[in-house]
Amino acid sequence: MSRQAALDDFLERHVFDKWLEDLEPIGKALSEQGESIETGLCDTFDTVWIRTAELQKQGTKGDIHYVYISLLRTGIMENIPCYRIDVHDHNWYLDTVDCSALWRADFIFEPLFRRMAGLETAKTAYARKVTPMDLARIQQIEAVKYHLLTVEFMKSMLPLLLNSSAYRQVAKSPNIRWMMGEFRDQSELLVDGERAANGGTIGVDNE
Image (cartoon, rainbow, N blue to C red; front, top):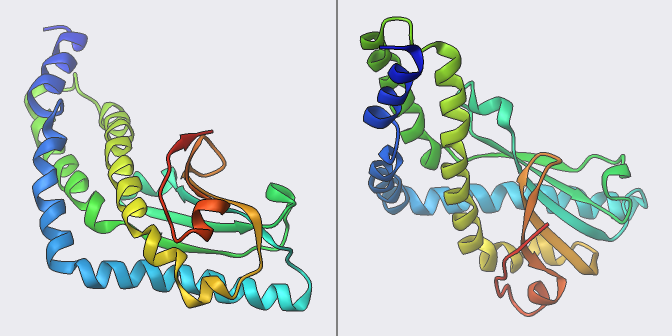
């Protein structure tokens, strides 16, 4: 069996569609730990809002125009599913006053990491035709599916996040945009200023 044939067989047997089996444990984790997961996310955002309000009072941060929730790809390879929350004023990426926090989506990504550990064992049946580099690529590709699940979870949390008392204390542009994607890369619009002002009606767009 050639290396490509071995890799194709490995993918067919052990990778393709296997992520669907992880939906049940993810749902179970959310059901059993939902309150602590939601509280942890809201607390993380509130930390950012409180810091932002302080900086605005000091005059070092303008009205908020952009909220970015970014997957840190480098952490995925270390089994650390971190999202970075960044708040920018009108200067956007030229906003040098850092106001950020990290949030971990362990309950969504843990099944992926367990599955990848199983693939380490499964690849031994293919001699050296399936390499650690192959597994690294598989993990990055599969992570996209779990990121999309995280985006859906974040959308479901928007009403709570947008109605936070700490968020209401922050000076915001009427055109504020909440985006979610990869760090300084392609992002999806979660909610814009008008919808946020109307209580968090969710809309989807691409940028």
